[in-house]
Length: 146
Image (cartoon, rainbow, N blue to C red; front, side, top):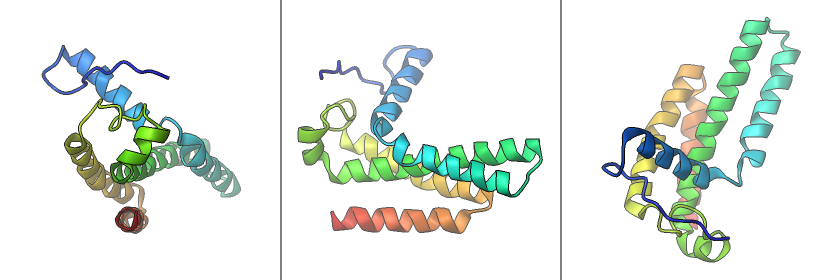
């Protein structure tokens, strides 16, 4: 599979083109992983919300919160994991943003830093700050052992 490398970095093209580029990079970071994170986590939230007999508005909010939280978790894990496995990804998953040259590692580290700030803020907003912080510790300790 061959992908065309176009830089999504600021300063290239108009605002809409840059936003499309950023979205493309985000999708490439997590393209193969939603079935292992976002979908099961959200499905669990559906079952838990149903079991709790939440009112329709509260039910919908719980599902949206779960999907947003799980997306943040996936971003946290995917970026951190891919930063420590660039050489492996060059062989096994060359379409990912770093090994394909779509973005340099320094930009991925900046994105990782932003996610490391935004994920706990999401946890704080949804009442699960300690879980978000625990996930960050686990992800970072896993990245150090690889």
